[in-house]
Image 1 (spheres, rainbow, N blue to C red):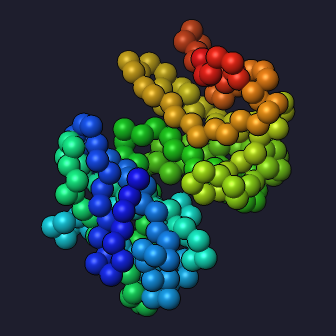
Image 2 (cartoon, rainbow, N blue to C red):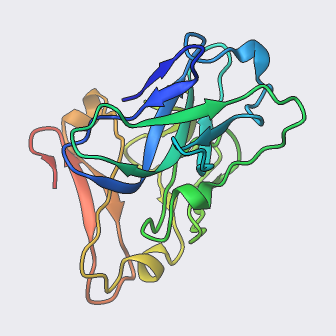
Length: 220
């Protein structure tokens, strides 16, 4: 969660049960938190800084001047159980150019980050420096949708739609001692009635991993 104070242009960081370092925080900006009349149309002039003025890496996932814009900001530290940590957002420079740095937000600890916000074509971009772009099996398979939880998303039909990441498994997590996989998934009634594959590694040698969603037993 985030809280931005109108006029002061500060964003209170989330209260965390553990100390976090170099952590990507999702910041939401709407007309009650930012004056869109003074921003460039795609948010090119938006900048974020730490409390000491240090510029922070950020990635705009969605810019929507008629609704809510969502921006990932890499924060150097969030103190445990603190409600006094802030970052600052600046805007209003008509001559500013886009300064987004997705690979700065998602550092080398992140092997792949797919927002799946693409609205056309078959390529799904990876925001990390690994650059593991995924390939849909068709421009509408899965179908782009604007109704994702954060921004754009892809609507899988549950039978034949998939996104293929060539060599993604072998070049990222194979041989790793530990790793985590995170998904934002909204299943429909059909998905709740059976099992659907979320992630599967093929041609992966002796060690393969996969995740399935089952309406009765959850993810396994």
